[in-house]
Image 1 (cartoon, one colour):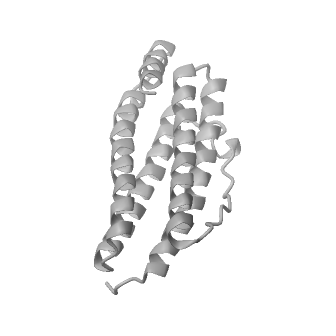
Image 2 (cartoon, one colour):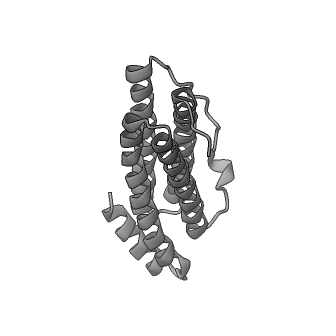
Amino acid sequence: MAKMTSTALQDQLARQVSREQSTANFYEAAALQASMLALPGCEKWFRAAADEERVHSRKISFYLAELFGIVAPVGLDPMGASTLAGKSLYDIFVAADAKEREFLQIFSDISMDAIESREAGIHQFVQWFVEEQQNAVRSLKTIIDMTRNCSDVADFLLVDQYVGGLV
């Protein structure tokens, strides 16, 4: 792989700001779906996940501004409730897992690019996100395993109680 310039790494991080905001929108829509399904624990978890994505976006934005004087564009890819309408709770968590796995791969790639480019500061900064994404993927695996076999209201209420307790 060719050595990346600091500018290329900065561009990757700037693009991630928009991805984080887009995923925050996805989680807000998922919270609305959970609310409509009368699952307050899941709603709470999705809202916390949306807040976390916004924190990630701000953290990257401040990093880019402070170290490089870059104001990252926050173009939003709107992911509204229409993308989740009619989806099961299981399907929503599977979609969340796909997003978190995508971000894990993106942050892992940026981390490797930073190592190859001898950008220790960028590598150290991005490693925090790699660990965050690994934790999210682990949590979602458990939740998906639990929701996969839900067949009645009691099952969903148990999942809801568990997921709400994670936040």
